[in-house]
Length: 233
Ligand SMILES: [Mg+2]
Image 1 (cartoon, rainbow, N blue to C red):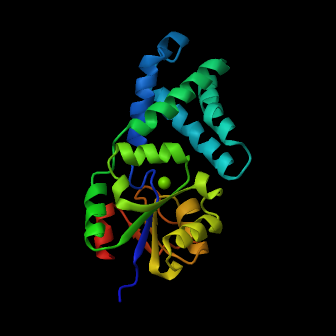
Image 2 (cartoon, rainbow, N blue to C red; image 1 turned 30 degrees about the vertical axis):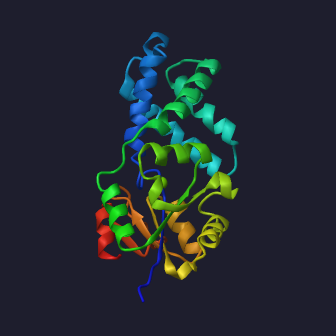
Image 3 (cartoon, rainbow, N blue to C red; image 1 turned 60 degrees about the vertical axis):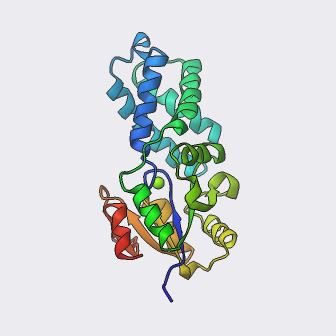
């Protein structure tokens, strides 16, 4: 008997090309809301400033220091401050449009569909465990055409808890009706996907060529691209 039967994937930055999709969304907003008129002179600087603050606010949200609502508009408010713009209604408007436009974007990594087809062909049962909002994450997988690959889609919103907490992995395993040692978690974030999988007794695949795994956190496998999963599955 083979070791793994169920494969749990993270979504953002693992299957769905968050970076590219987010950039496209921010470029759309930059035009639509005429940000140059407010003094935001450069799209690319606007985008990198936003991504910088988004990381910081997501970290605070994960740790429970701020609410979902605060995360949504304050990351944009803080971005505008860097351009000397103090305009809460504008921050809220951008945030609203960002959440509306982002999940309509369709960019996946180049080998996402190929690997999902490969694993489905080999009769692995596939699921998602994603820290994100229920409506948003479902829109992303529907619009990018990958929803049909997954039996269960576990979002932190429907589970009521986020990765890396053990409870969301336990919840996912229970829903899938599978034991932890027959399951594999694939994700790009050490602090969420890999630490979480280890805590839940699951083997893990760390997919992130940019940030090597550090000494204390030991994923079972490390890959540079999704196609490399074929070596293990
Ligand atoms: Mg991710």
